[in-house]
Each structure stands twice: as C-alpha cells, then as structure tokens.
Image (cartoon, rainbow, N blue to C red; front, side):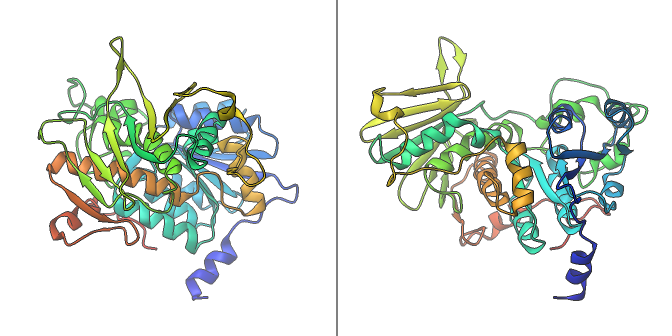
Length: 403
C-alpha cells in the first residue's frame, strides 16, 4: 500500500463492539431529516453527529436527538470524527460528489441521495473512491427496494412480455429558462453559511430561490427534473434492460430545438429508451413503460399494469428462473451491508450509471446535437467538444477531491 492509503486504513473507524452502526448526517433539509427520523428508531443504528450549512436546522436536529448528537455547520468537521462509521449525504446535488468522496477518504461508508452526481465526471470519480477505499456505498434510489419494481424487472428479464422492443420513461418534462419565480437578492438568512452552501458553484448573492427546494431549477446546483425524477425512472429502465454496468451508446435529440421531451437513447443491442411524456385525462403521469413483442408493462410508485394480467405473471420465480436481490428497504439494506461488507441493492456504480443517462439527455437538449457515448470508458466518442462537457468549472478552494 502507498503511505497515504496505509494512513487512511489506519484512521478508518472501527465498528462499535455492539455491532451498532454509528452514523453522521450531512444535510438536514426535508430528505436528511426524514433519514434521521428513520434511523433514530432503527435497531442497530446510532446517530452520533449532524451537519448543515443552516445552523437552525442543526439546532433542531440536535434537539430532536435530545442533545445526544453533536452538531456542526461545516460537514468536514463531522468527517474528522473517528467514532462515525457511516454517513448520509442529503445535500443539494452540487455537493453530493465532494461530500461523498471526502467521506470515503475518511473511512466512512456512504448513503448518498439521488441524483448521485452533478456531472458525468463526478459519477465516475465517486465509483473510483468507493472502490479505492473499500466503502459500502448506497445510492438513495428507494424504488430499487420496492417489491413491485423488483417484480417488474424479474418479469422483464424472464421475457414475460417477450423481447423488449423499446422503453418509455414518462418523466416530468425538462425545464425552460433557468431559475424559478422572481425573488430579489438579499442578505443570507441569519445562521446560514451562504459561501459554504455555494461551495464549488459560482459566487452569487443570496437569493431564496437558489436555496431550499428551488435549487433544483438552477444548473449551478442541479440538473432540473431530468436528473431529479429521471434518476428514478431511468434507473428502473437500466435495471430492466440489464444495463446496471453500462448505458446507451447514442443519444439523439428531438428535431425541435425547443423541445423538452423526446430524447432517444440507443443501446448497443439496438433497444431504444425514450424520454417521453404521458397524460391521462389531462393529468401528468410519471413512470416507466416496457414495450415487448408479446405485451407491455407499466410501473410507477404504487402502480403496476400489465397488458395480459393473467396469473402466470404473478407467480414467484421457479428454481431456474430469475430472482433478483431482495432489499429490506434502502436504509436497512445499507446498514446490513455495512456489517456484511457486501454491495447494497443500489451500489454507487448503479447510481452513477443511471444519472449518467440523465446528464447525457440534458446535454443533448441543451446543445441540440447527437452524442456518441462509450459507457465502458465513460467518455464521448471522437467528439472533442463534447468531451469538455464531462465536468464543470469549480470555484477556487472547492475542487473535486482527487482519487
């Protein structure tokens, strides 16, 4: 081992003798608070510390834990603690990769919310970090742990609808001009470290729309609904097609340069996945539709419809049939894997590959041009201009950790 790797291994926290997983939480917005509440009542999990750039959220979380957890504004101080085994990363998207990579380097296992990365390069780097530092890294794509999504993928891979001809991902349409609403710039909220919130993003004055939920509408911090919901639906499409370790090889934008739907992804086996839209009686519908030579399956949260709903579709797989990894829920699955050191239901590479589909779609829409992609090498093929789109510029002092 190189000296740095040896020191990292030596510094990695050892799990408590009771086999309890000691946890830290980075980001305490709605999702981070949800994870904190779940783990607070999960046997075998112990909350040690929390962190958020907004001090009132830190204080609220510490009070929720009845002052039994330490609180920090700067998550990097949390990562310095040797009594933490694993961390949740529930920050805005532009902080996912830096925080998760630093956590891996500090010897912590990681559950990072989706969309896993903010750029193509970040996703590949997160995979490298998890492998180099031997971390159990779960992507927070909870649909992987829902039984009916698992059932659909088993049916697809058992060819219950024949050979898949194409897939449609019905997703909230991609957004128009950057930003949401009209809010005036002003002074940051009291207790908010605005500079740390911006992190690698460009320095700009505080604006409420760039903070809290609305950050999703700014490319500096997110990829819009394409990455927010696309990370769920394209993930199921990739899973059903058996492409968890791969991805599309060609991305074709719609003819209309102003279109926000219609990007087509072509896989090496010829199957197409289409970023589509669907309405029923004027109501938008999210989900994934697999269209095969002998039928069709549509799946969404709480909904599964099959063109031939006969009993044979609902039978459990036989001894020689496909039976996929069974998750007990993404949090519990991750905690169990931390103890067993096995890869979880939505390992870091699965999450990175799924959000890569979203990033490629955004680039096709934004630049209105066909792209050729090499999923094995994580790079564009014979396209020097597109190669520059693998990553974004980062503000001085907030470079992506080197792996």
